[in-house]
Image: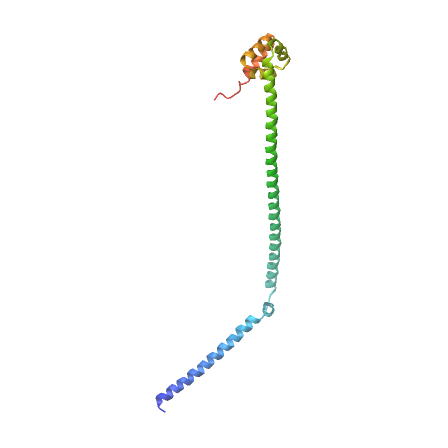
Length: 186
């Protein structure tokens, strides 16, 4: 064999031995990592030397975690209660709005009926002879009589006022004149 061949063979043998060492190291490393992953956390904690401060810190953290879980539960319950209350309020508001609309319709019907009654009375007073209507107006409160006279035709209202005693006619005239005194001018 030539020297060159022997050198290559020696280098090849050395490379082979180095490769075997590397393979052995990788196998040992792989076995060590696998064993580390295979151990349970409780075993790892049991092997770990613990001092009193670490155990107390762990207990404190667990207590805080438990407290936070309880607080989160209470907050969730409170949120559900608020949602239920909000729904109840919205339902009640809807009911109140419906009741208000119904009441408004009822009041409008009643106002329409009352207005119809007043309109009929006004027509009745306008069609009466002033001598017959004047004593009725003399018995009414001046504000009430002024309300009727204000809605009557001017000629019929004038005839009724003329049939009243001067003092009663004056009082009703003052009420009529002052009805809009406080109304805005603009």
